[in-house]
Length: 80
Image 1 (tube, rainbow, N blue to C red):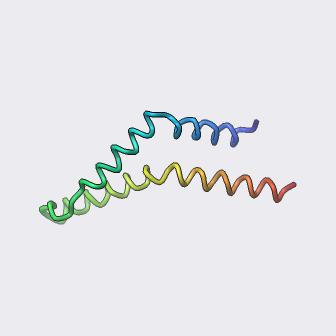
Image 2: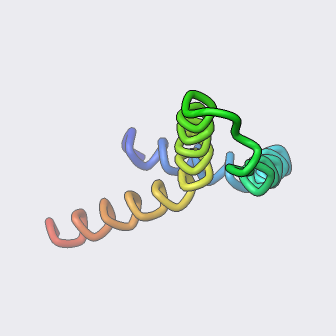
Image 3: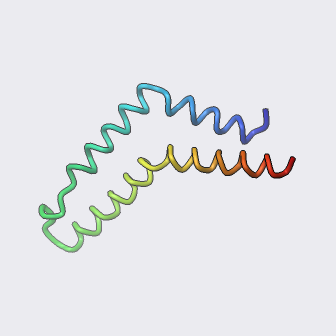
């Protein structure tokens, strides 16, 4: 097993843990609770925007890695 395969296997193990699922649910709740109507000023808006960008990046991490793994597998199949 090469390093890339080990990396994706470790990620799959992580995504299957109860802790990861709880973490993702918490983040989804945080995203749902961010309200632009509660922002007082421009600075608060930009802070909230940055927080949302980070939360969406983390929430998309599992899908991003799955897509990267599929792409790597396709590349490996083409090399054969």
